[in-house]
Image 1 (cartoon, rainbow over the protein chains, first blue to last red):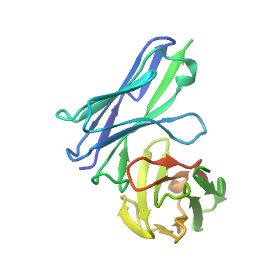
Image 2: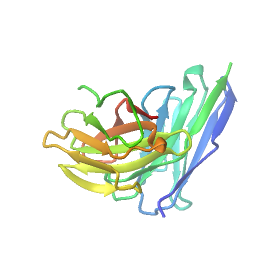
Image 3: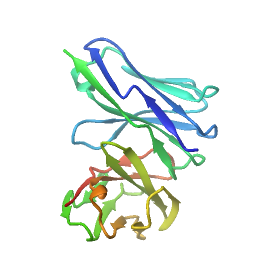
Length: 114
Length: 111
């Protein structure tokens, strides 16, 4: 069925340390994997995405890795800062290369300890 | 370009009433998707419209419906409101691919 599992549900890290959030998906045809950041009271913002033809993508302190064989992908945040505190959602589509049905993970609440 | 806008931002209704929410996508975007966000259930897909046609639908009862106009603006309607419909309703637009951009949401409270 259509399922995206996300772990952990909460994560607390010391400022400056790294944070890793993992997601697994069920549809082997999924080919696009975005990550969204939602700060308190704000809309989800697309922060990074990866397509199935690459295994890793980086953008400054954030990176996403994809393992299509195992059907999982991860978000890595290095040198965490207070402004990284937010809820992070992964997602995967369940129709080919369209926005028809994006299924979201349940979210990870990331807290950065000073 | 202006971002995705949603109106109203806040709404209070009583059980049994109906409500209509509006979403204006980014200029040029033809796809609009709707989501319900609750603390317990996360982001749940409601439906997606493209060029005035519903392309896909989530697992919500028939009380939830939507439509899209020729200018790509979209509305969703919830009839016979229940307490459990209290949530943040988000719409997201895309050009015609999987990259979605969210609006600020409409916070619906049903009393």
